[in-house]
Length: 109
Image 1 (cartoon, rainbow, N blue to C red):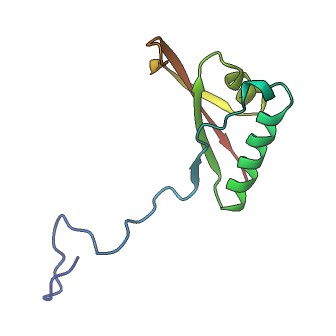
Image 2 (tube, rainbow, N blue to C red; image 1 turned 90 degrees about the vertical axis):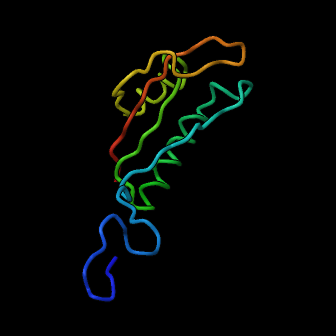
């Protein structure tokens, strides 16, 4: 931000919305299929639709995470997503049991 003298004030950014530095990146957040509907390809179709939508919106890199060893973990790997890390004891179930979480990325568009 500049003072009236034209000098830039330190530690302040110009007024207005913050610049979006990661417009190329999007996160797929918890796509879920009811247990009674699993095994019919719905999860894969949801994932494909999310990828298409993100590509149309200009994203080139997608991120997501899921419980390590779950059906979703296997789905993402089989759909071309790359696992890049596991965080131990990331999530607590309602009963208190801790579960590891695998993080994935996929380049699209």
